[in-house]
Image (cartoon, rainbow, N blue to C red; front, side, top):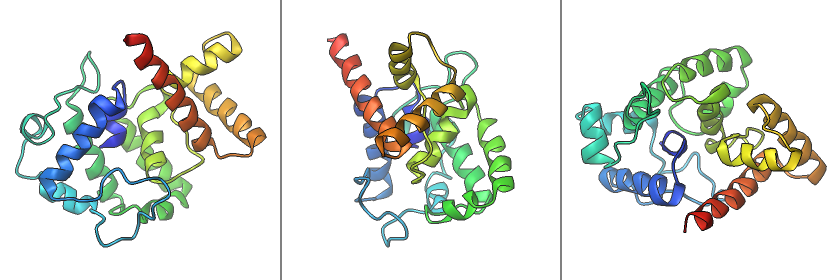
Length: 205
């Protein structure tokens, strides 16, 4: 849900409230936990099967308007509700053996399976350039070496190198820079994103 609603949306104003509305609906008490918190396995972790069961009684429009109260689209041209995309993505992961976060490393250890699953995930409308959303799914699942070159990251790199980079080039530049700084690519990605999103909010005031 976080990965889907984060694309082309302000996190604090849109994404976090949407996640919290679902958590309230599902009776979840611990949401958006700090990165240092052990996440899986834990007794209060919601599985994807439980998530899918909780929304099974709602069609995509009702899920968007009545449960999440967020009717954003994955794209302004031919997109679908982000709520619908969230359901589709969760179904794909669940059907491929990912039910809790602890299952992700097992999937990631099989590169052929990963390629197949990513192909399925990227076919859900709104994947972004070079599967940015899919990369963010792995990031939120705990892959510290995955980065999400969204518009904030691309703008920062463009300022640094004097031209707009491609998404694959951005990933490479972040990996090299992170290695030089002795941090993980995720740490660098997150620091840049926080810096740039803060600048965007300030410039909008």
